[in-house]
Length: 133
Image 1 (cartoon, one colour):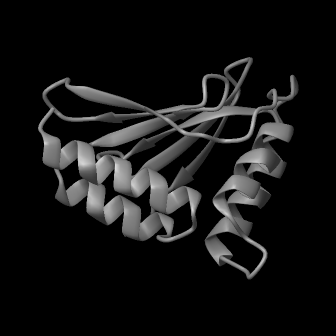
Image 2: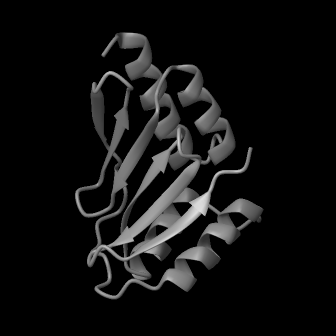
């Protein structure tokens, strides 16, 4: 992967963690750079960015340590996503990540091509959100 794309992925990851950019802005920047999606793995604290040619880049997320709850609570994950989308004053990506892990979310897959985000639990239960146009 070229240095420019690596820099964009790193900048987007950092902007999510320090709340410098919101999800729509991050998605727009990654799409413009040619990425087709990414995966966040809360158990490994990694984020992997994917290009259409099969190339990928894995970065450490630097999220606080802590396990993922055994039971996946789809309704709670959906509520937390709506909280994040509303972007209230008390929202932050790190806090969101801690809360969805407590709701049993082991990670999520963002597909720009499919315009959706699939949140998944340790038992492969899922909650799907569509990315608005």
